[in-house]
Length: 157
Length: 110
Figure (cartoon, rainbow over the protein chains, first blue to last red):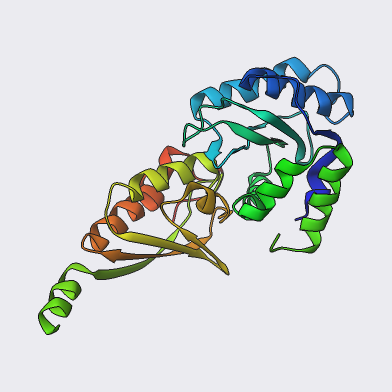
């Protein structure tokens, strides 16, 4: 599994306008919607579903990263958006620290194994301090794409 | 020196077990969090391996990386005074409680 297989590079936001969790989720889902990844008329419902999931248990796993996600019939394959906030966003993270990098995933309902393989890829890199640092340093969408493509070639990044 | 070793070995038990993921959705984030919560109730160190991947059983970020699908067999290794207790609690969570989730539909439970 590669980032390029599921990350929508038209939905990478180097500086989120949102200052809170729900706003950031809205911005990222909207970016996927605008890129045509979510079918027609599903945007609002998906935003609500991601926020609901987030309220049940935060996906802010600590170290400044969060991976909000939900399964939804609107997608046939996993799609992801990536957003950054230099100010940091309160995601009620496990370590109670602000979140600077957000990878939002929408997974198909019927393929739990695919969802897990995507998570494996995401967390393999997110747990590397170097990768988190590089991600935070990205100031342009192209830099995020370059970093993720580089990570696809280098499993240790 | 000898006494210390004796005391150490009395407190540093090692317990290993292989357990199978049986809920349909596999070890996604919520089950991984439950796993880490249970592991953290004990003092022993817990290491979990799935194929080539190895994770600290008390770290949610590492456990999320295991991507253990339904049917995957995980190796659990605990080291410490309560090694046996933690392994049996984790086995119960994974194999008996199925993290409170359903098994695959249309498939008989083994």
